[in-house]
Length: 187
Image (cartoon, rainbow, N blue to C red; front, side, top):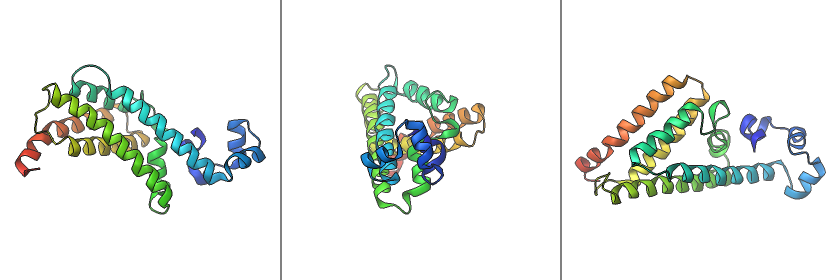
């Protein structure tokens, strides 16, 4: 996973995979078939692990806004993974999604599951009265997932923690005003 995350599919050689895994080339081919199958398995596992980390972080106790601030600030500070290596899902989308239907399908499923995790947090906020009853939790969850992807890409360009934290402030401000916009627009 890490080799593909750091270098992408094309730039990762089978020799690098054998060095990283400690498994001989013939055994890797025997277990997976080819490099693409290894990549798909690595991407699926990465997606599972990333979703697990997202669930864990968003299940933190406390007010929804505080949980979101802590989560997004962790991304900005590099304490939630990513950084210059980025996210294998984001990297895969940039490298493949437009031309590989199977990878695009896997990434769509990942995005839908991540949106569901954000939705769970938002529903909790509505149930606890922190968010208004008419909050568009579906639209807001999609916005937060999209913002996560954008922040992850921004972190890869290393603009510095201060810039990334400014982006987090913008995400949270926009998320806070989303209910007002959805109410005005009739959504």
